[in-house]
Every structure is written in structure tokens, then in C-alpha cells.
Amino acid sequence: MPDKDVTELVSFGIDDDECLEIRKCACGAEYTPWDFVISIYRDNAHRCRRCKKGFYFRSKITVYEVT
Image (cartoon, rainbow, N blue to C red; front, side, top):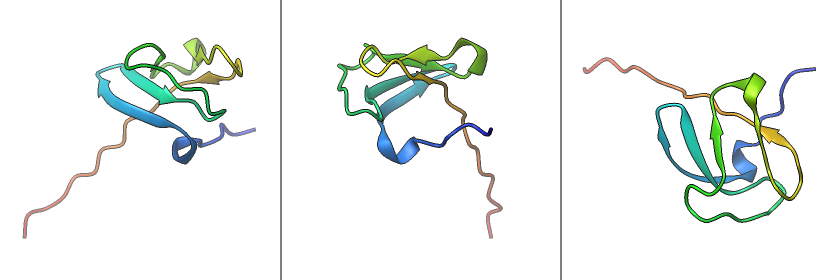
């Protein structure tokens, strides 16, 4: 089964290379900045303290040509 995209259900801050701060989990649990941090590694998914679901993230880069 493919992983579920929950981007629209969470609130997050800036990413710092391989870390991303989660401010609100998909379950609604809120966290202070850098209290709940997830990484890019699926095999090392960090879990929400409330719902226990594991999360990781991917960065998306778009390259544009200047016209």
C-alpha cells in the first residue's frame, strides 16, 4: 500500500536539511516549535506522542527557466 499524503492536514515550520518541525499533527495535536521533528528517512519515522502515527517528509524542488 502506498504511503498516505497528509500535507494538507498538518502545520509545519521550516525544514533544516534532513529535519522538519511539525507544529500540528494530522490528528490535531499541537507542538511548540522544534518539539516534534520528523526526518526524511521512512525507516526512521518519528511518531506523534498523541496518535502514535509515524511520519517522514520529502522535499520537492521545481526548476524554472527564466524567459
